[in-house]
Each structure stands twice: as C-alpha cells, then as structure tokens.
Image 1: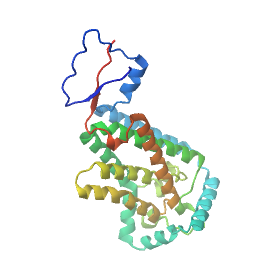
Image 2: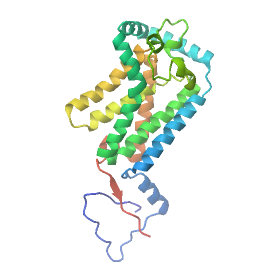
Image 3: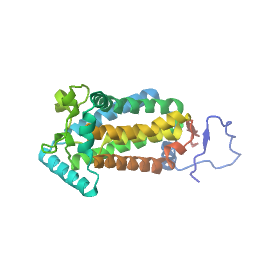
Image 4: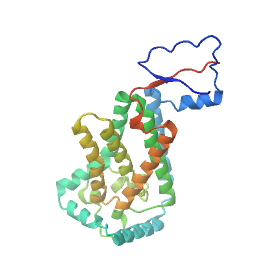
Length: 283
C-alpha cells in the first residue's frame, strides 16, 4: 500500500489495472516518493540552480565576519596539532616546490582555475551520460558545499600563507600570477579566513570518485583518482591549506554522500544510469 511503481524508459507500457483493483495511495506519501525518484534533469533548471547556488554560496562565504585574530589563533593551533601528529611538512613542501618556478606557477593557475572547470565538466558529463545518477550526485556536491559554510562561520582559519610568523611563501604574490581571489589585488573580494574545510579537496574528491566509479576507460578512471591527489599537493605547495583542512573537506563530502544515500536509498553510482520515470498516481 502506498507503493509507487518505478520503471525505466526502456520498459514496456504498464498494463492497465484490473477491474476493481485499488490503485490509490496517500497523497503525501506519493509526493515524497516522486521527489525521491531520480528524474531526467532539465537543462534550464540545472543552469539556474547551479548559478543561484554558487552565488548564494559565495555571498554567504564572503559575508562571514573576517575574524582575523581568531583565525590566526586557530591557524597556530592547527600548526601545533600537526607538529604533535608528525605531519607538519607544509612549510618544507611549500619552499621546495616554490624553488621550481615553472612548477609552482603551473600550480598557481591550477589552483585558480581547475577547481571550477573540472567540477562543472563532471556535472555536464553526468547530465549528458548519466542522467539517472545526476540528481543524487548533484545533491551530494551541494550538501558538501552547504555544510562547509558552517565550518567557515564557526571556525575561521587563516591559511598558512597568512601566518605572520609561519615563514610560508605566498606563491601567487611571489610569482605575480593572476586568477586567484585568495591573494593579491583580488583578495579583498574573498573571505581570506575561510580555509577550513577545503572545498578544493571536497570538490576534487567528488569529481575523482564520480569519474573513477562511472567512467569506462581505464585511463579516465586513473585520471579521476589522480585529480584529488594532485589537488592536495597543489593546495599545500601554494600554502593555501593545511593537511587538516583537507581532512575537513573529506568529512564534508562524507556528509554529502550520506545525505544523498538517505534521500535516494542508494549512493549515486548505484542508481540506474538512465533517468527513471515514476508512474503518476491515480485518484
């Protein structure tokens, strides 16, 4: 009772109910079931949703008070904690990679651009080739980003490059590269103390997992796994994040996938590839 029959687009038309068969379902339950059924995404709606969501995310992120003193105290605590854990190698990595000009300049541009390009590219790929999984994967990404805002508000954190006594190199200023709102002339347009959690890691790991689980060519799956690993190297080399910021991004992504799993009943990659259509409820 109350069950909504779901069929794929390739299924034959459903047989009409037998005479006298009861097909009614509670209206509220039916609406929830329809919402939880993966549907074919609509292009105009997805473009609007992504644009509005990113604008809202940026507005809220940048509206968080820039608590410089607290952010620097938190950075000192993170740095001491990493020393106690024996993982405080960001300073060494930052200076070593900065000594290779072509490499660090490439990393600066990587940090400034691929974060958006690859994420949008994976969304487009899902929309085109995996429409049945698109909504669940998008929910995981959006939930990851949404919960990150909580971290920015309650735990302001200065990145290593802004620690006055840390000795880190701000590689974007050092090499005069463009494109990042994290340093230089564009710094005033972005909250400089929203480093925990790292959405460069949250988003890149979402992209990597999606590609590794859904792509068919081996080379694509390998690139999917390499992408978040490379991003981790980049955020540390450019002194934009601590290792523990990356861990925060992983935890946010875990929350995003948990929410998608709870809503759709399965993780995105376990849903059917093509959009499923729910039979309309009869009065």
